[in-house]
Length: 294
Image (tube, rainbow, N blue to C red):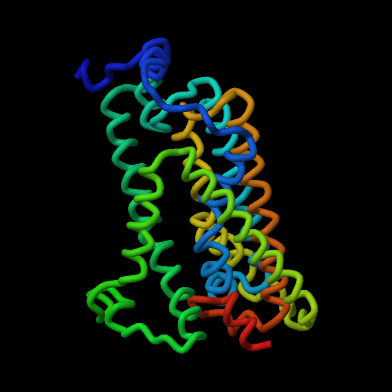
């Protein structure tokens, strides 16, 4: 029993981190970009439309705000602990230092499972947009290569390919991967801003009525659903050993990325539900759908 509750001291963890050869290349800007890149994905591309149609209607903006507030408390905890204990491992390491070995192992496997599931979900959501993109150039991917066996297909090939490519990129090192990530995040933000700018001209205020068709319960149900859209800020804690000034930069990166993503989600939801009726957004690629409709 004593072994299950055995802890590893903070001084020992810090000592082990100093003996490693990880290069400290990440600054506040890099961490913010990393956080935005980790957070914005399936949430804005898929969940906004589905939650608006099924749970909250145009009041989905409040669902995102509720989820953001809840995540904000967790983000503050991550920022505090990560800056105090700037080592790799995230919640695994924090649990090891404060609770014990058994809980640390549970948290480690839980974290690994979360990353596997969310990666699969995001890769699967990306497939729909990729297929829509290549279709515009007259290229058709066989349906069997766009679905997993449980959905009647053979393999979701685009999802597998993009996952392998990104895995290879990450294996190249932080310095190389952060450059690509920063570029991709800037492109991602640019596309979202373009969507907002173009969509704003097609907003019809009557589409916001009724604003909360499913009531308060729908808003909170939507909040639970879109909580998934904010997952990712915790990934910054795993990069603590590669941060130049963890006490300062980790806090800025975690909080800034969460705030920026919340603003983006809320504005996108307002524009999207203003362009078409929320009832029409029950589709897996809502952003592309509303642009096609208008």
